[in-house]
Image 1 (cartoon, helix red, strand yellow):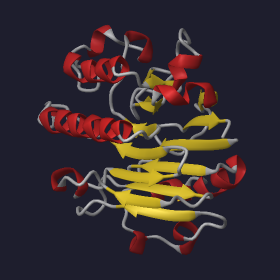
Image 2 (cartoon, one colour; image 1 turned 180 degrees about the vertical axis):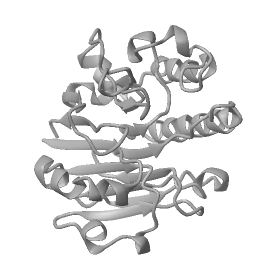
Image 3 (cartoon, rainbow, N blue to C red; image 1 turned 180 degrees about the horizontal axis):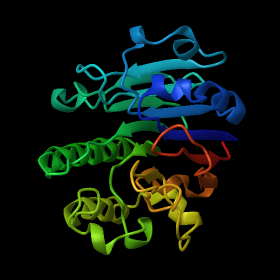
Image 4 (cartoon, one colour; image 1 turned 60 degrees about the vertical axis):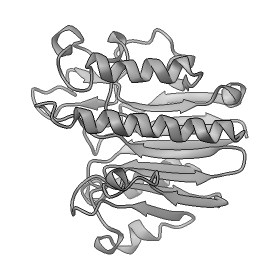
Length: 256
């Protein structure tokens, strides 16, 4: 059995001050995927760069205090690649690809479209390149798991206020259509695979308006798998009780 957690920590140094290390010890996961780490390794203390029992890999943004993803892994991947091989995306530290043999795990922090929608084109370019990258691996016969903050709620069930957010980035038709395409190509949203009608299940809440207290949230953090892994899935959960970020962790357990 292997358990993987994914969490947009909204600053790993801030999360450390809010109990991240205690949480890591408590969940005792095999693999931890973090997004929006907002740090370079040289800005972190050894508790984060050399956690007991884990190998650590970072993909950091050139811009300090921005974006970034991290991978903590007990099993040793046969290879780890930072980025998609496209400079425009990789300079923002958005992707780590780890090959575990039975599957390739891709930890990703998808761009935010910005309130004025100015970054929506960049976001869609990343989404297109990301799916092409996954599909290429599938053509090579590989099994895929991708996780992270996709910054998009797929269907109306995936956010508390769908009507009010039809023109908000994160729920724009063009953004949602990309997830439609992912599903059409066979990838499975593991949470919806196991919990197709569960409502009020969110992974992100705005900091204002007591949104989390009132559970006015969005489900924008995912685990997707290639269809050949369907029968390996045991659990896929959202851990809304875990504090420390405006996102909560999501997890996937498989029977490898």
